[in-house]
Image: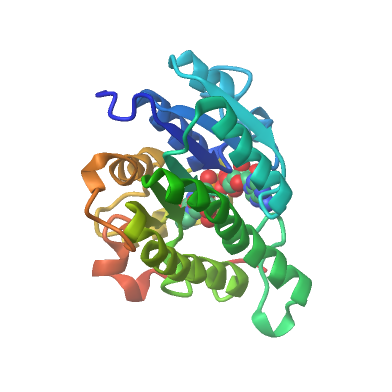
Length: 274
Ligand SMILES: NC(=O)c1ccc[n+]([C@@H]2O[C@H](COP(=O)([O-])OP(=O)(O)OC[C@H]3O[C@@H](n4cnc5c(N)ncnc54)[C@H](O)[C@@H]3O)[C@@H](O)[C@H]2O)c1
């Protein structure tokens, strides 16, 4: 792989497992030093069978670049500020931020009319507030540098209500798409781009376990006829993190096998258990 990011530094949030781990490894293969941050760094316990070292930090280092790791909650501004400050102290610049933290954090599904405010707020915080706080502190640095790329991770659920029982998650991801545009406008004069990806159905250990019984039905909905892989997502992250996307900002790119552009009405997932 061409080392398009040699000498650059990337922070990947929520990178101890799943798709975030794949982003961290791809940035490392491209030559970037990689900062791993997660609320729980012990990825191994999520049964990811192909993990080749004790931690994602070690996996990254095995690829010949430097790495830092930070365990903490991305909704905590003092934690996020420390991650950004220590990154600059160690590597001298911050070139790429991938805001990958997301999901429901165990809060679980529910109908909007039954949902406790605390549960709604927690999921908005996980998906939106973490993206805001990391972008705020990285954006400050990038403004001064007059360069940088912020990449947010939304979801097709931010465009259509995939599940009627995920009002918190869908609203959080829709707001991430909006924040992407507003921050792109603020940072454009400084040469900093802000874009997002909106993955569709992407296979991870966790996702497969959750949707095991429905995978055949879901495949039928996807025009390209398969569930996406973490690599499908990381290839687009590579595009957005490198100079290949220099003249692109404020955009959200679907990584969904054609689901949203070609077959949006059938994207909704039925039979989701409350
Ligand atoms: N898997 C899919 O099909 C799919 C589809 C669309 C969008 N996405 C999005 O892609 C991203 C990654 O998804 P994934 O499937 O790998 O999920 P995942 O749950 O496996 O990974 C999320 C990571 O974020 C970490 N995290 C959660 N809350 C945090 C917090 N408050 N502070 C710090 N770290 C925190 C988790 O520990 C975990 O390592 C998420 O934003 C998700 O919403 C995934």
